Image (tube, rainbow, N blue to C red; front, top):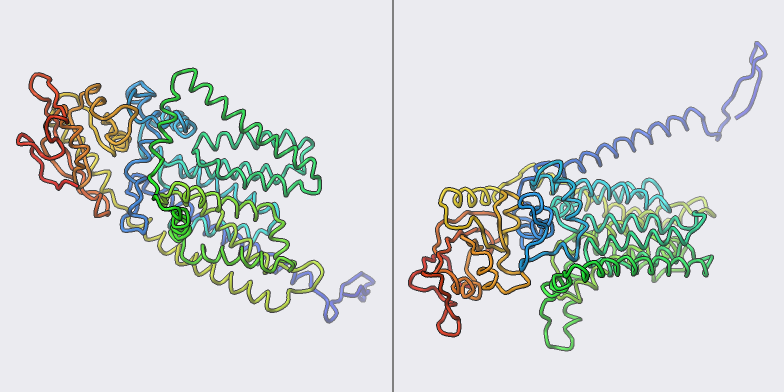
Length: 557
C-alpha cells in the first residue's frame, strides 16, 4: 500500500500488488463472525433439545437400553429430598438411604422442590441445567490453552452426542460430578495467575470434597486434577508441590469432617452399606482384572464407535511422536493430561468394580471429546516458527477433523430422532399402578419395589426398596407392613421367600413399560397378611416357590 496525493492535495491510499486490502480483511472478519454466530446458534439449538419432553422415557431402543439408572437411580439418589417434601422425613430407618454417603445432589433437589414441588420434570430439569453449565465450563477450560474453533468443536461433540443426550436428561449423579470436576480444573489451570496460588489450591480441594460427596467415584478423578495443578505450576516446582498438598489436605479434611458428622449422628452404618451394595462379585481367577479391564475399555464404545477409538489414536500418536512440536504441545497442556487421567480413572473404577454400566461413562465421554478436539486443533494449528505446517501433518489434521465432523453429524441425526419421538411408557405405567392402588385399597398405601423410589418421584406413592436396605427384607416388611409389591417381568425366588414370611401374594395388574426384554412389564401384586399376624419360617417350609394361596402368573427366575 502506498500513500499519494490526489488532485486536490489530499492524502489517498493506493493498494499495490501483493498488499492486503483493508476492505478484504474486514470482509473476512465479518464472514468469520457470521460463521461463528451460525455455529453458536446450532449449538444452542441442539443444547435446547435436552430440555424438551422431560417427563418422557429414557429413549427406548437405544444401545444403552439395559442401564438400570432409567428405572431406579433418579428415585434412589433423590429419595431424601423426595421424602422430606412429601412425607416430612429425610431418612427412613432400615431402607436404602444413599444420601448419607452422597448428600450434595439430594440437597440441591430439596432446595429446588421447595419452589417446584416434587416432579420428575423438576429433577431432570436440574440435571439439564447442570449440563448447560458444563458446556459453559468446558468452553472456559478449553480456551485457557486452545483456540475458539477447538473449544466450539468440543462443544459440538457434547451437544450432538446421543449418549450424553440420554444420560444428561436423567436426574442422576454424573452431570453434577462432571460440573465439580470442570470447576476444579478451571481453577487449577489458573493458579499461576493468582496472587496466592496455595489458597486457590485449597479451593480446588473443597470442590473435590463436594465432588466426592456427589458421587464417591470422584476419588478416581483426583489424579487428573492433581496433574492439572502440577503441570500448570511446573516451572515453580516448589509451589506446585505446595499447591498439590494444599488441595489434597483440604479434600481430606473436608471429607473427614463429613464422616465425623455421620458418626456423631449414628449414620455410619448406612454409609458403609452404600459401599457394600456397590461391591459386585469378582471372578476367582487371578487374571480377572485383565478381563474386567478389557470389558471396561470395550464399554467406552457405548459413547461413540468413532470418537473413542480416535481419542486413543491421538493419545498414542502424541506419545510416539512426542518430539514433534504439535505432540509436545499436547503433552505439556495441563488439560490434555488431565483428560487422559480422568478417562483412565473412570476405566480403573469400572475395572475394579468389574461392573461397567453405560452411565458410568458419562464423565469419561466429556474428557474423551476434549481429547479428540485438542488433537485435531494441535495438528491444524500454525507453528509460530513456520508459515505453515508440513503438508502431511496438516493433511492428518484435516482427516481427523473430517472424522470428527462425520461422527458429530451421525450423532446429531440420532439425537434429533430421540428428541422428536418421545415416549411415556414408564410414566404411564407408574400412573396406572398408582391409580389401581388408590382404586383398590389394601391396608397401608405403601409399595415395595426395586423401582419404588422412582415411582414415588413420579406419582408421590410411598415406597420401600425390596433389594437394598440396612435390615433384611423380612424385618423391613414387619416394620412397615406394606400393602403392595411390584416386580419387573418375573419373580426372584429369594424375594418371594422374603415376602412369604409375612404375606401371601396375588398378582392383580401389569403395565407395559420400556424396551428391555427383561424389564418391559411392571407387575403389581397385592400383599395379604397371614391370618392372626403369624409368620412363616423359611427353615420349616419351602417359601421360594408359589404357595397354594398365592396367585402368580409371571415366571419365577
